[in-house]
Image (cartoon, rainbow, N blue to C red; front, side, top):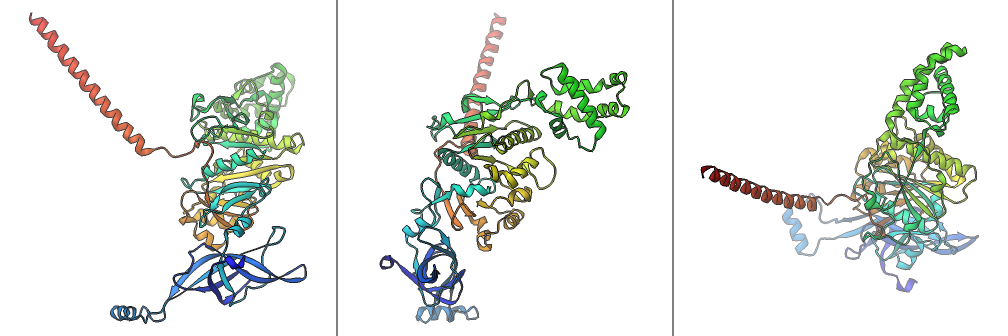
Length: 542
């Protein structure tokens, strides 16, 4: 391979196993973030062996000893015109590692040596560096500096959860759609919590037609949801329903905010539930409230006065459930979502935050229970969009505890999180810190940058500083899904996007057209009215 390599410099000054400086000719210095190749000697199985070390340029610097800032401008011009001005260029590169014969990535244990030549890393080497075997690869794009080099994620990396982080408009929803489509094609079982109906068109190709996986994709929506898109636009929508009478005492306490320490309230609620379940197969929160309000009847049964008082006190907690308007007379079985090679989009658009939160907690709890009990044998990938709403850094939510539980223990059973957020500083650290892989797109908020730095041990300072400069559709990927940190340009989607911004200029042009039509219509109406008035007046005169 060395015969085809393009030499661009030589290692100079101090070098280590992690980084090195190199000098280059001014016209041959590669751009920042370009990939380099140099050679080093490593002990491989006890034998010294030359290895191909891949590095990436972090900084490019230029200087002149003649053209100093202290010189007068006219002198500087004369030095340049006379050809006496010197120029030197050097760069700083971060070592990414070398590949073994088995394709594993290793970091050098020895420093690369000054005086060694530095080459542009060949395409075929980078393809090996950032690709995986076809059965394991999730293709998401290409290198920012090399469009011809594909970038893939390792499916095995999802075993340690993924955080997808970017500010609004950077392309995170677009990318999440690509990952979902690719995981489904690999045979994954996916459940996507979708607060804004961003993923309801994953069964459609870009032109809006049903794609080849459409029969393996189901959109669920609670009857209380108004929805962002109609069923005519989305296609068949399956109702996601929760029967209130299916809840046990613990479930009712959870969603009504009754603490276990409220022993009298819990006791009163338990008695009311038991009586109601003995009388009716199905009932609603209003039925339970009525039962609690008539707890004075229990005096005839020698029920403790504290329990009766507790039952009455429970009413104020139950009233919030009645306002949620989320419960129906039947429950959707989680088996409808947990199917091999199937994607379930839970459309939460049009629901209050509290309702969305409770539905999310119910679904995630059912998933965890089913899989931890060994009743579903396939890997399940759970996408939590707008994760800072469900598991905030401060405050309590219904779904927060189960998301934390899945983050901490889910991988043991085969439940893997994809946590998606534009505000990492507002998400609970317990969730984000468990995401051993992260895909980070443009982030400019200093608080969010700091939250990323705290949660990601593998994101270097230089990569962190470059996050604000990323363009839409560009991302930094770190963690177990890639052999080494990589900057990628995201590929085009195969599926229709639901979360894109509106065409503001197109809509405003439509508004101008509509306004002109209304103006013409109004003028025509006034003209008709004037003619009619004139005609009526003429008839009266006759």
